[in-house]
Image (tube, rainbow, N blue to C red; front, side):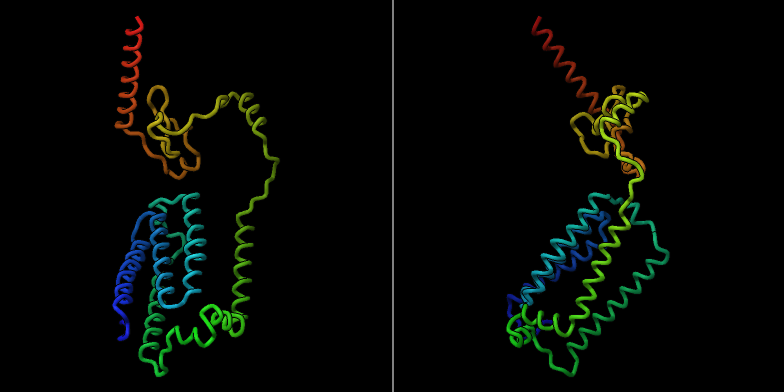
Length: 270
């Protein structure tokens, strides 16, 4: 509920941005594609930053955009687009009981939010707005720095150490020691010629120039798809797009038009 002294502009801003934030949060949970969910989450974070800025929490607003939306979410999107996710992956429960655990965490978070709102609304202590808190320490940023590096300095340093340990641990877990010397392109070409396997370069993906996506196999001269034109990782994941009769009919139509064109050209030259 908004305060009694809230202006009309603040009320309109709250309701408009609130609806957009809830819509983005629902899209994050309900959309089937992981990239779309990440984009909705990024939009929700931007709206939260606008709420912070509108309420005078300038430091939190800038950090919300620069750190969470600009760095963390873009990292998520980069990983999703690099690794790739399908709708089938989201249906697999990799951790036993993770749905019940997620439900318990959601209920706990809801209880904390309700308790915080109730304490701020019905508590015995008078609620002090952020304007008064900023004025006490000379501004929003100095006020946060005062608390962060005095009262919460130990928690701040421990959090930084944990993040550093997590980054180093992730690097060690993903690092793979090379057990043999990496072969050069010349050595690989010599081996292919010696074994008589794929002596020429592998064909490119796509159906002629109409589809050049890496997950669509190219066509051989007889019109059948070639699995050699797509990456092995995509083949193992089952993320290839099938080339149906419609695409084959389009290719046949292109061949016919090309033959007709060259036929007319030969007649004109004669």
